Length: 124
Image (cartoon, rainbow, N blue to C red; front, top):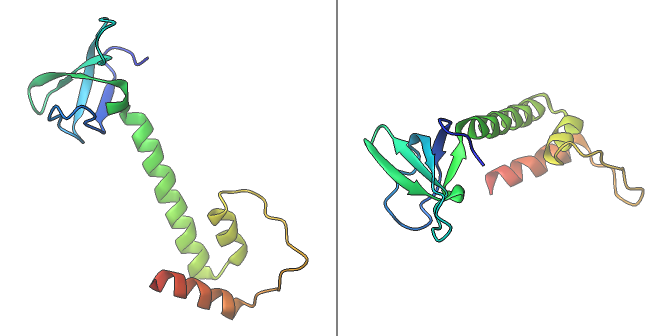
């Protein structure tokens, strides 16, 4: 459960109530009615209104910023690996950091074939 006064972003409009998706807001109250599907009352300063929202429709601003930073970092590492032709770093980033075991029956790929394969995937 989110705390009162926390800054949130509306990420969805599940019940089609014309929520301003993408706008910032603040949690001003909990909806304690057990018969209601809404969890929070949110104040959106840009719209100068309060909305009843469910927990699935909002996300903390901090969480969204962390996810965006991780995505940008991953893209930068991929760009760096491709620019320096660092196959090991590229595979590490693409596999999500999991250690990959070299398979004995798999052919060893040359750098030229690797670059050709990446360029082909990027073209498609």
